[in-house]
Amino acid sequence: MFDESPTSPIRPPERDGVAPIADDADEPPTVVSISDIHGHLGDARSALLTLDDHPDYDPVVTTDPAMRLQWADNNYVLVFNGDLTDRGPRNDGVVEMVARLIGQAPDGRVRVTFGNHEMGMLTPDRFGWDGWYSVELSNQQRRGFLDRIIDGHIVAAYDGYRVTYAHAGRQDPYETDELNEKLVSAAKTVKEVLGTAEDPAVQREVIDGYPELLGLSGRTGRGADAGIAWLDFEYMPEDAPPQVVGHTRQDNPRRRGAVVCQNVIRNNRRTDGGEAVVVETPERLVALGRDGDGDVRDHEFSLPEPAEQTA
Image 1: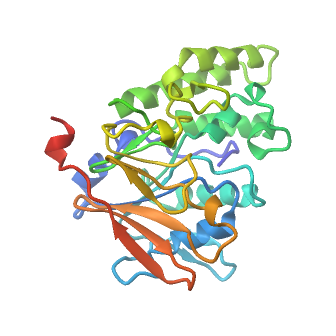
Image 2: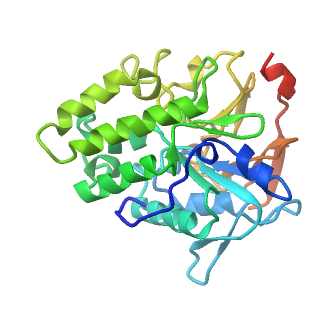
């Protein structure tokens, strides 16, 4: 995904949400999301295969003889909800998996939302993350990453049926298409000076210029005024707009108001089970997670009715 091989651009409105796909399909696709893989390829594989191991769902992915995930050619949209890399041992494997699924799925069926570790790829000179994958991409890899933003495969946010998918989310209502256009603008600005002496200064300029996207707040960057890639779930108010977010580690998918936080992989690394995805249809929002025996359990989240969300 972070090379310069061409991909089909995904333009608005298909870039920004599931509705155009649902309007053109015989049946509305189910949205599956997973967040904060952080290079833990085996855990991501286990989480994505929960649908295959649950009697109520068709698989979103299957495995080949080498245990690599392949698109299952069922009616899904798959959202990787930020932070693909860093911390874990299989960063290249995760990036290759996502690229493979983007290439195999019908156009528009796979998205990556922009997390704080994707921000490390956009603005690596801002962070002192020595040894981490995101800040050590080559200029060619960074160019490929920026092109994936410009082409609409990596987005700030993605609208589902009743929730919006964003890595850290926002406290107040926002327009997904406007934020995605700002992310494209930031990527184009950085791409113009990529690898030149101007690159570090322009990185600082885009951070300052797009605070709702890239803003950091407080000592850790995750404070109450942080942007959509950084806001800690601690600061998400009960009346925040309906969203599925990651970023803040949880033992299990957790709801506050109409926001569900799905970042569970790292907190369950030393236990059997715990891997989970969130599954959305027009009627339901459900978490599918493994227990210690490898069985898959589901938990449905109650959310406001659509009319209440826009009132």
